[in-house]
Structures are given as C-alpha cells and as structure tokens.
Length: 124
Image (tube, rainbow, N blue to C red; front, top):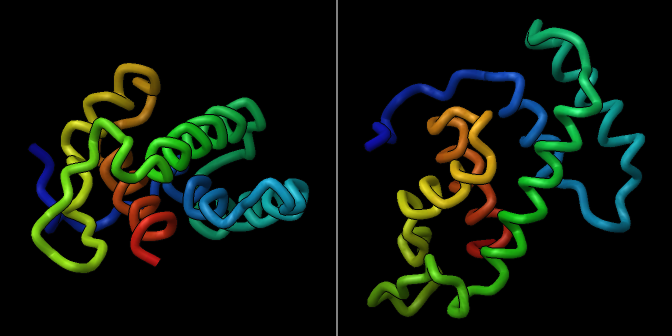
C-alpha cells in the first residue's frame, strides 16, 4: 500500500504527466511539448525524450477513457455520497491494473497520475 501522506517528488514522469493532463484532442501538441521541455529544465530532470512523452500520453489517454466510463468502469464503486467523490474509484486496483500495462512507471507516480486524473476528469 502506498502512503498518501508521502511528499510529492517531482519526477520526470510526473512533470510530463502534469502538463499532458491539460492536453485535449484539439490542443496544440507542440505547445504542450514546449511546456514540458520548460518544466523539465526548471526541475533539472534531464533531456526531453519524445518516446517517453508518447508513452505517458498513451497512458493518460487510456486512463481518461477508463475514468470517463464512470459507472461502467470496473473500478467504479459508488460511495454513499450524493456528490462525486474520489473514493468512487478503487485507486489501488487501478494502480495494479495500469501497472501491468505501464510497468515502467513507479507505483507512487501511478497513484499520483490516477488521483490527478480522477480530479480533472471526474470530480471537476
């Protein structure tokens, strides 16, 4: 189990995901990639790698597709709340599921990605 109180470490993957989460099909990918390059430089996380960005983008798209299924998602577990709640999704099971396909991410980053995406694409 991952400790939620752990301080967020700015990893290469997190910085990239954090920019990509705001990218939509109509977005300018070149602008997003420019922002990623800038953030990587600010955090001193190394060179921009297009293949890694494509990998993270593919994961983000898969994750969003799953979250947008809402009650049709196998991870959806509606709570008693009358409002949307992050607990409506089984995050631990989602981590396990996505780790099987995207095993080059560490599990702490996966938890952050999933929690962030639930906020952006379900709670907002």
